[in-house]
Image 1 (cartoon, protein in one colour):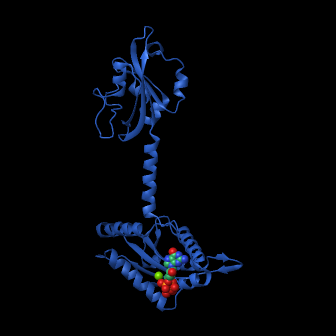
Image 2 (tube, helix red, strand yellow; image 1 turned 60 degrees about the vertical axis):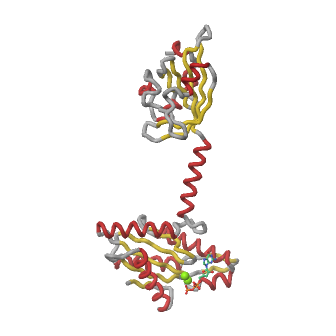
Image 3 (cartoon, rainbow, N blue to C red; image 1 turned 45 degrees about the vertical axis):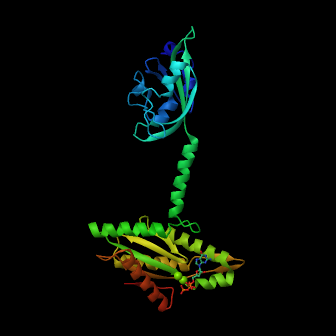
Amino acid sequence: MTSECNLPAFDILNSLHEGLYVLDLQRRITFWNKGAEAITGYASSEVLGRSCADNILVHVDDQGTFLCDGLCPMAQTMQDGQFREAEVYLHHKEGHRVPVLVRAAPLRGSQGEITGAVEIFAENSTRLEERRRMEQLEKMAMLDALTQLPNRRYLRQSTLSRLAEHERAGWDFGLLMIDLDNFKRVNDTYGHNIGDKVLRVVAKTLSQVSRPYDVVGRWGGEEFLALVPNVDIQNLTQIAERYRALVERSRVTWKKEELSITASLGGTMAHKGDDLESVVERADRNMYRAKAGGRNRVMLG
Ligand code: GH3
Ligand code: MG
Ligand code: MG
């Protein structure tokens, strides 16, 4: 194979992060480095000797046009001996498309005649960054910036999913509305920044003491909502009590003072025929009953 494609030092080529492969004039793959294996998922043993157009890489451009029938940068380079660079999407063994920057160069024999071509390809980092940015945006759209908890939008979606499961499979779940007591006074006395700090501390307490499948998020302002699957009303009461007690025991330091806060919790189980509004409203009503009963307490129903 070494003589066939005139490339010495294969181990050096194998140490590249970039993918690199070599085609002969029949567009058969004669060399496939480790980088190409990593980027495409195809091992060298799977592709050597096969045509590059043979349902392996099947490059497409950003319009989805197949490039293997003549528009292929490698085929063009073998025809005219020119270097080429292109942004294409190659086919990963698992089926998805990978954005790559490809560079094709001709290979020549001792008389200067073209004997094949070599292509180097690297994951297209601007595309990758774009994708990561999109993922980040998606995450931000579901996260509350202040507390890093799931936001109202996420909570609404999760509640809808739980309701659908409840309707379809009868899986029980409970919902807790958690409202901080006299929070306006915290802001008025210590300032908005300390108010924010209290919100972050409460958020951390709630998320750390919740069970793995429970979702606690920020419903808005100084209100949090917990979705608690696989419980009955007794479990839900215990969980609400635990939240209440641990919020009460959380502390924020301000100058030399230790500030504490309490919360009133209203809870309910999902009923048959509930929709998002009805189940949240019931939890809310119970939360107001807890306020009316003197705050720092749990009311379920
Ligand atoms: P109650 O016990 O009846 O719930 O009294 P409360 O003072 O907690 O209720 P109220 O609804 O009157 O006040 C809520 C306060 O929460 C008012 C608002 O300024 C404050 N708040 C809402 N969002 C934020 C926030 O992101 N940061 C801070 N620091 N304060 C917030
Ligand atoms: Mg409130
Ligand atoms: Mg409040």
